[in-house]
Structure formats: structure tokens, C-alpha cells
Amino acid sequence: MQNLLQKVTEFVSESFVKAGKTQNTKHLERTVYWLKQLKPAADEAMLIAAMSHDIERAFRQEDMEKLKKAAGTLDKEFLNRHQERGSKIMAEFLEKCGADKELIAKVERLITHHEKGGDEEQNLLKDADSISFFENNIPTFITNAAAEIGKEEVRKKFDWMFERIASPEAKEMVKEWYAKAVEGLGN
Ligand SMILES: [Fe+2]
Ligand SMILES: [Fe+2]
View 1 (tube, rainbow, N blue to C red):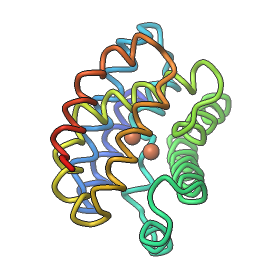
View 2: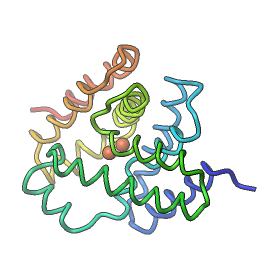
View 3: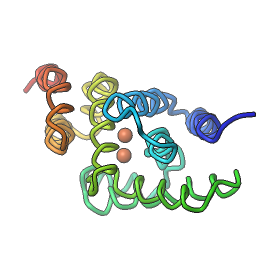
View 4: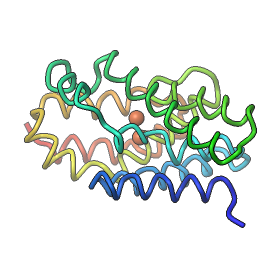
């Protein structure tokens, strides 16, 4: 029988296939990997949150595209909707799977704080997310995102994804990737 994390992985992967945004799945799988590196004892809720924290992108609504154009992806409201909607999607999915209420509540708390962190576990997820971002998302940002939102916005995103890292260990790990990303973007 499949465990809950496997069910989540399948749901996330299928959702991004349907949305035509399969590159997100790699970012999420690697967030799980980096979370385990930062915290080998990460529990099931943490691993599930890592695998699904950006699920909102697979169910993106029009208002988000408008907000992105008007205010950018670092806008507070944009980030809040991204986190809140993602958390709701996963809570509904986990409920359907018959998951434990406490686990669902924890996954929700983690996803709703994955962009800015908060407590120790929320910070770990945010750090793993940043590491996976620098490991996997840079080429797409340098080509597609720079054309769509402009180099200046992409640079702001790189800086923000690096600065928000809480653990010195994680910061050290991505220091070179961050420098290369900035260099690759050019002026
Ligand atoms: Fe996110
Ligand atoms: Fe992410």
C-alpha cells in the first residue's frame, strides 16, 4: 500500500502535468531532498509540505496572473494567496486520503509560512525551498522570467531567495549558486 507521502507525490506530479508546468515537480522533489539533508529526522508532515508547498501554481487562478503583472511575485498579497491557496488544496487532498487531523493542521501551518518562515520547522522548509530554487530554477528565470517580468525583477527575486535563508549552513551551501545566478543574469 502507498504511504501518504507517495500519494502526495503522485497528486502533485499529476496536477503539474495537467497544468503543463512539469518543471515544478523537480523543484518540489529536490526541496524534499534538501530538507532531509538539513534535518534527517524531518517528520511526515514536513516531507509532505516540502513536496507540495508550491501546489497553488498547478491550480493558478487569473487574479494571480494579474497581481503578478501589477505588483510582482514578491508582493505580500501575491505571496499570501500563493501560500493560503496551496495550504487549502493540500488540506482537502489529505482529508480525502483520511489523514490524521494533527498532520493536516501541521502541513497547513508549514505551507502557509513557507515563503517567509517563522518557527524552526517553517524556517527549515523555507531554507530547503531556497536551496532547491538555486539548484533547479535559475535557467528558467534567466530566460523565461527575465523576458516576462524583466531582469530587475528577477534580480530582486534572486536576492530575496538568498537573503531569506535562516540557517548559516544552508546559506553557505547556495552561496556559489547565487553568485552564478546573478552573473548569468547579467546587467
Ligand atoms: Fe512558494
Ligand atoms: Fe518553492
